[in-house]
Length: 506
Image 1 (spheres, rainbow, N blue to C red):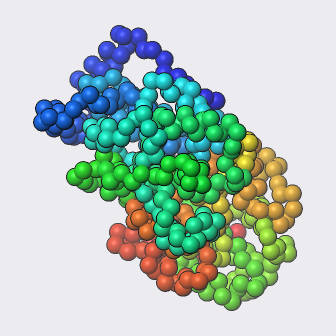
Image 2: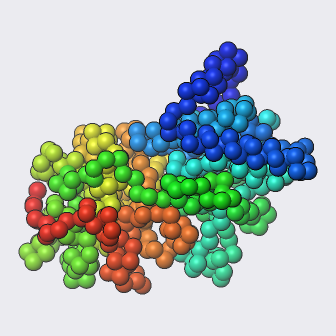
Image 3: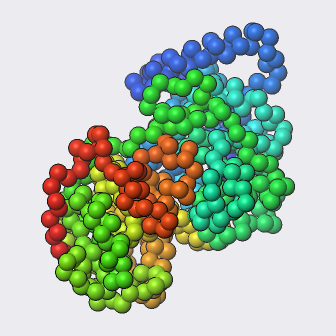
């Protein structure tokens, strides 16, 4: 479905909207409005200082695309950002810009991957707009500074703008691209916002008609979009823009920044109680001796309800034999057996199920805070989102290594559907994604879950996160990784357990 073209608003409706926003600003935006007024005065002074105003960019020439999600918590945060953008436009006395919430404009499963929607952006806005500006729901935008920043770039040329990230060493999540010099290739940090000029949008539209992205898998969208735009050196590189920042958006605006980002862990009330989370660890006999001890040295004590599921019952751990042989590839049979066991044998009040691998490192206190923002009566399937075949009607899924989080309602809805594995060794995370997609239950993405190790991500990217999980023991000391990146400390310590957990079987 194409993003809707802007409809002309009746003059009287626009007038009353502007009047309402001017006269009755919501309390949350009063302080921001004062900042905007100050910036307007600064901009007027800047124009009088002799700078040419011939190329001044108008706000109506920018289409804002918020990379939103349909989950109720995320949708609300995106709507608050939309309100903020429109409020600032009113304070500037400019015509309201187009603001698109990505989850609303298209029911296409791959809308979040952006490229499938580029032709629609070109058709709807290609003639009357100059920029498409993308941002996340937690990005905070200082509109006057953004206008000042974008007008430095000739809108008639092809521009790909953002805060630049780069790999410090070649990594599996980028298929070891640019192995000889990983720092050479730059890709945008979505948290800071990123922009495409309309000539580049129109060029990409023509190219997408004949050349779709190469891979069937979407693993790290920001890197894959940059690769497609770069076009093996024939397209533009990312141009780093220092005004696009990821400084903490909860503090005072950083000097010179057009964007900020809320870097704190979401907390929407009291953390979810320990008794409301059941943790299932997938393991097998050959890893009992090396991986399970790491879990016990690190995060096991944070779990009140935890079981280890294996192909062999070992009382010293203890492990539960589900009666299924171990498989070397996928673990679909084991995962669905865990889901059945959770739904049928756990207390009804246990609202959340977390399934992790035996080499997953996770912070349960942080997860408990994060889950305070989600409604367990909704069907929630949460984790790090990947995609398969999204250009041709595929599906999204939560990649298993970083941890998969299910509300009880999601498990109930899934098992009632009779959607099951084609074989015990089918890839469990992908089968779950396919099943939930068929049920109309979207994957809820959180970048705080990680399929790989900290060394596989740019330091600047992790710098504005409070991570919930990492995965893999390969070429790292997993205990050290845990205590460096995930161990409770400061205010988090109050959310962790002060005594050993009770090992309650289902």
